Image 1 (cartoon, rainbow, N blue to C red):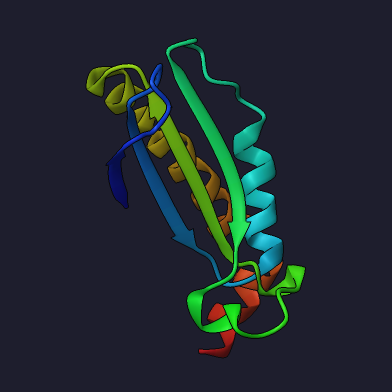
Image 2 (image 1 turned 180 degrees about the horizontal axis):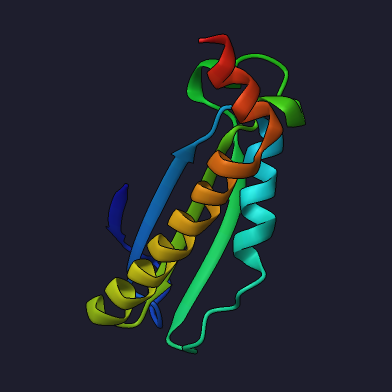
Length: 113
């Protein structure tokens, strides 16, 4: 996670959360599940992106190499940033828990180990 002062004058506080996942399919699924819920406050903005790990950036940037879910929050105050990120972390916990319990590929990987 990285916290920075944003260049956007109206939203000076920002936080970027990078979550590495095992596959592009899981990262894409997490993104689609999380982006459904819009931010409730107009004082907070959130952006999602799928990124490749640094080691894969030199290679062809295919969709399959994009396994990192990057979420960037921008807010008008530190407090609004904290409240929004806390809510996001709760939602993220639910999404990851469902993936762990129900995803067929994850279950197959556990059986192999």
